[in-house]
Length: 275
Image (tube, rainbow, N blue to C red; front, side):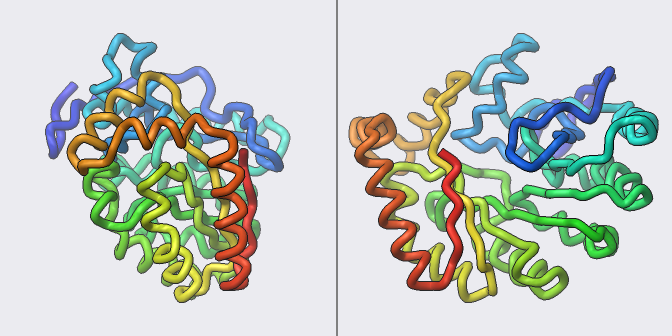
C-alpha cells in the first residue's frame, strides 16, 4: 500500500466478479472500478463498503481500494454474460482523483467500446472529459453529472469533487458532443435546507447549458453518514434540528417534488423522481 496525494490511503484488492446485478430500472449491471471515493462527500452512504472492512464512518474519503483485476475480469465476463446496459458507477465515482493515475475506468471503457455495450456514466468530476474520445463512439450512451448544491455548500459537503462551475462546464461540453438528449443532471441527494437555497440557481444554470432532463433523489440516511453530515452542518451554521426534521418528513418531500417540478416545467425540463 502507499499514500497518494491529499493523504488518501491507496490499497489494492482482487474481485471475483466485476459486472454485478444493478437494482436501477433498465440497467442490468453495475461496474465499480474502485471501493471508496476520494471526493469525500459528507452525505455518501456508500461508506458501508468501508465499514465492512473495519473502517469507521469518518474514514470515508480517506481510503480507496483499487480493483487491480477489474480489467481482466471484464475481458472475461463480457464474453459470456448476456449483453446489457452497464452503469459506471453505483457505489463510487469512476472519475475520482485516483483514476487520473490508475486509469481503470478508461481501460474498462475501452472494452465496452470494443463490444459496443450500452453504457450509463455518473460522475461529478471534470476528468470525464479526458475520455470523450471513447464516450462519443458508444452508440448507446447516457451521461449524468451529480449536483446537489451550489458552490458555498459544495466546498463543505463535497470537499474534493469538481466545483459547481466546473460541473456546468462539463455539462456544456457533454451536450455539445453528445446532444442534450444523452446528458442529464442527477439532482441528488437533495439536501433539506441547503438544496432549497440552491434550487432556483441550479434549475436556471443547467437549463442554460442545454440540459433537458434531470433526476431527483432524496437524501439516503445510511451507514452512519449522519455523523459527517452533522459536522458539515456545524461548519456551515445550518440548524441540525431543522435539517433532520425536514429529512424525515414525508410532507416536506411531497412539497419539494411539487416545487421542483413546477420550476423545471417553467424551464422545459423533464423531471424523473427516484423516490
